[in-house]
Image (tube, rainbow, N blue to C red; front, side):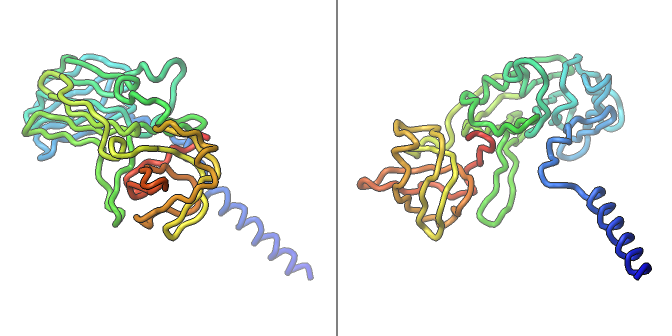
Length: 276
């Protein structure tokens, strides 16, 4: 009897050790997403690279192994990524898609900064680019302001596209806003709502029941439209895309002959977590 008790105790201790060493659900907020000095960002062809330094406030830029300049100091550069032209003259910093909130008014903080030859050209705050700040995913300590974009085959694409040959930066936010910038000047070339936002009569995020083409809203909050969440409760929502199921989702709807019809598949919308 004693050996079996001893073996059981050993097994229990091993299980507890495994449990304690394994990542637990919901621990993403323990990751600060802060890059250390020495982090390297390369141009598309690798001719230019930027090395983070100075306690995360500047980049040393090298071209073909030769240092050409260091950027002017800026706070928070260790909370994002750098995009470089092949000659190293143009550098764009973009805030991390999922980042640790600091104290104070985080919406006033820079989200995109443009540099040329190490000198700051222009910057844009989170508030300027989000336009609809409520359409970000907040957790206990983190914010996600750039969407996770993918197609029906779960092929992901970046919401940030640096076109080095054209000197342009393309960007899409969780607020369903799309931007194009001239990287040589930092000028905003275009700013518009994306196709999903423009084409929807109603945008709502909340908890859904159902599937297989028919849904109902249990509770939610409206992003776009003049209805209340209560007005949509109990209504049958037709889903011709067949991509939605029970759970928390963002819905884009059109009203067709008095019925509510899903106008965009699930993978074209970001779920706005912790918003209810």
